[in-house]
Length: 152
Image (cartoon, rainbow, N blue to C red; front, side, top):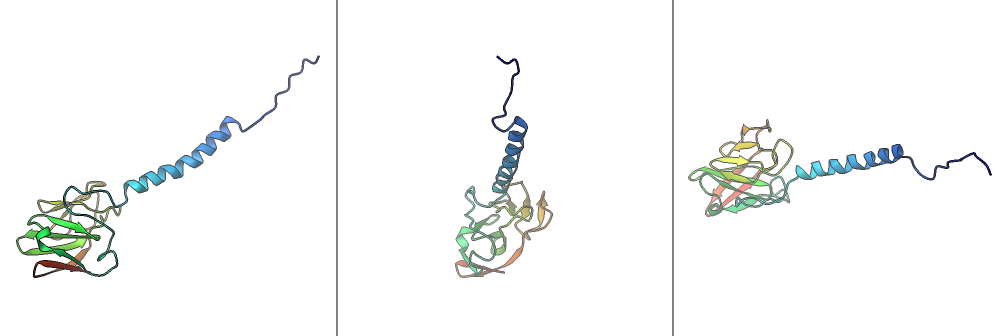
């Protein structure tokens, strides 16, 4: 019998496993952060959102004026339409200038981003509270009959 004991390594050591786990965990964590700042989700009764620009196909967006309350607004097809005063309609891009989330809630003449809490003026799209530092992109809102047409 031999008193010599030989140890064979049969697989990766702990350090190698930890390195491999870190390489997988970092990209996966990044996906979670991107998903948290993406547009989508539901609004609290302020309309729906589906993209950016002047409508999903780049053309004009038409909304019924009845869907835009005084002091409030609606979000549709990547556009925010507000009515800060009776008969005065304003339009902006629904994309928050902080990290690209879609704004959702419009009430009391304030447009709110649900992702990080930025607040914009329904009158001119200016920043009322950060973290955003740039205003929402202005668009042209034209009232005609019972509809408002929004274009760039």
